[in-house]
Picture 1: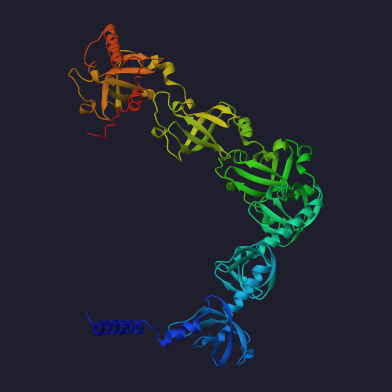
Picture 2 (picture 1 turned 30 degrees about the vertical axis):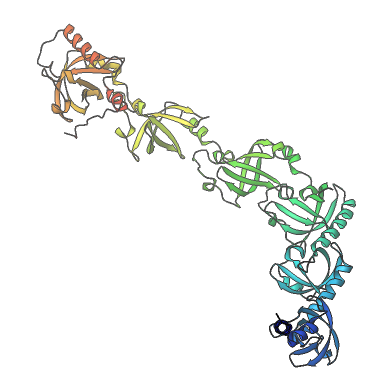
Length: 587
């Protein structure tokens, strides 16, 4: 290769390199930007000159290619801002989308105030703050230009009903938390108040002695008592220590805000609490109750409370006695006290029992009058005859009014000499007027036993004079059962025709052959006086029987009925076993 060719090639390479260098050369704009932004750091406070004051804000020159704008709203004293004035500004952004720096006058002041506050005060420091405005959950407080948060629960010891009333007021506050990262401060007023109150409590408790009487103000009333402010220390006056007598709610004696004198019953220095009493200012009336109201004495009082089991009577302030429902009437069965007394009634009663140690007095209302049962017992001794109306019935008897709301009972066993009565409705109904004999009087249990059948002699006493085995008798069928038919004979005596004695032919069902009301003739085949049984036979009427034959037939019937079963009242045994009797009304 010649020298000329070599030089030509070198020139070409130089030209290519020059072109490449020109392409990589920075533009004039980038050179200007680099120059204008050098030395600035975002998030720093820098000096700026007010280049122009406008109606809505100012333009600030910080030495960049462009001026930054700060709104009028960021200045508390807008009138004092002048052109060419040097101010501190906060550089939020070196250049925004419009190639302008983003500046803030307010944030510059906040940053300076924040540094000042955090340098001078630490967590636990006491500062003064002005209540600025409400936010959710509390109040924003101004502390020397820095906003802090005061939670609603930390404003006061007691809940604050209306936080708006506090806006504009200044208080001492305790810094409880400083967050440099989030740039916020949390303060508390409550901690200062509690600390102050604790000091006051300690001093107050030193000067209070148990057993002494002090004045306090009712702070709060609950269902179980009242809290009394004793000058900085709260004391509990329990409802049981308010009165020696009955009190349903503390509001009956106390009112919030009112001054009251109380006795200090106990002091808890650790918890800084007082137990108070009101009734202890007077002597316990129960200490002398036994001397003032001995058993058997009469008292007068007012009904102050009614319970399902009785009524409480206030004898004097702090002393109450109970009239149990069982002690309200001699004759009436009282189901609830209001049948006899009502709240506020003035009553006279007799002291039945005393238990001062448990604060109980049992009273009787009925004891103020003579026991009508004793009067009745003297007026109607056993054996006397009475007349009365049937007032009530049970399955075992009927209750008959004698007089003065006193009833006697006629048991079913005392209704008939001859019939087995299973239910009193077979003979009586409510409203019937009956005559009866007083059989027994039990004053302790307040019971009188009556009898109807005792109004006449027992027909079984002389049964032999009326009926003999072998006699043919006539009667009317009164009841039909599965085992036979009952027949009404004379002298109110019933006999039984067993199913086996109805016919020579086999009888499957008694009601297929006989009906209630039928008049029949039958032969007496058995008389059992001790057991009050009369056995009858229809099929033996037209036959001749010797005494031995009749005896044998009677034994057969007895065996058929099973030993021990009654003949006249067998329906009871069958009904008790679930066997239904037939009265002839069914087919």
